[in-house]
Image (tube, rainbow, N blue to C red; front, side):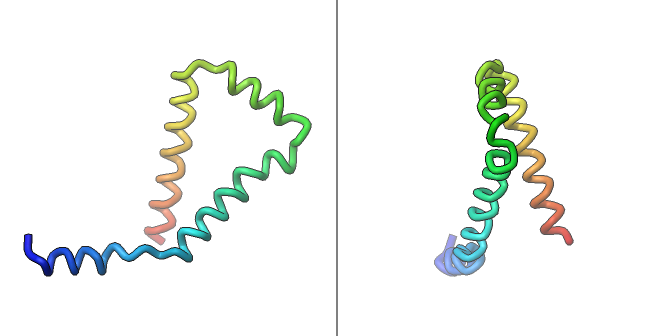
Length: 78
């Protein structure tokens, strides 16, 4: 690979700090909604999650991950 390849790659992979901070802020907002709306129910929900088997938690995490990827894909294709 020549030097021009790396220059083109660097220009293509510019990090957008503004987009990253917006995505991080949105993640904080979405993660805090249940605690704000249902503070009295969250301890029991967390206890229910803590009692689940690792394989069930892994499937739940994978489902959330795939849903997130799908949302990002659909958002990029608009």
